[in-house]
Image (cartoon, rainbow, N blue to C red; front, side, top):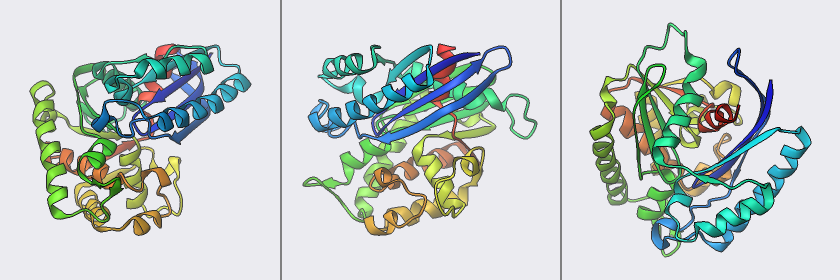
Length: 313
């Protein structure tokens, strides 16, 4: 067994996994798994730079994670940064800060690398299940980008496109620094047009319609699952490998896009950091299901973070 630590720093959240990995058996035993909403990508789509306050929120989370990693005595650490830090002019400032706090340099990975980690993390434990047909289409809906990966036991094709819950919200729903509440039909149509254009791009590389099982990852998808199950609070065990039908996803998306900030905040399983961006995230999921003809999505709590951990092990 090798004790490893993996950090995934995305556009909306930063997450830590400390786990014991046994490559011989394929077991990954969680010791600590946590997530902090830091909104690192705040304003990046508009300014091209990481905001000072977003950097400080991220560094504060890194300081907390450094203590956890030390307490558990992880032997190896890998820090992966994704969409927001790829796009930012001042990403060197981000890299220096992480290096000072955690002692490792964050790897600003490509969209293709991100897709491969997501696929490994989501599908490694699905191998041998008779109820889930291959090939899989793994869709990782992040804050700044969404990754599409098709494969059986390995990645066959992958593409990252610049649609994510934060990017779509900031691009289309923010007026004078405030999120429209609820969005207008024109704003929703503009988001949908961006999503459809991105799906066209993804289909140039990834055979989206060939997949037999759709696997959905990340906070927008897991939150939709929690809402679909009417969970009294966010429950990872109930969400992991849950299945949501297309009609239910459409119903929830319509509800979220028609609701106010207060109504979304009142949903028991809703993380405060997702209240303003969940509508756009759910719309991405719905559009993917409609484009691919998927009747349901299999929701996975295991994703890029688990793939990073396996890469360290």
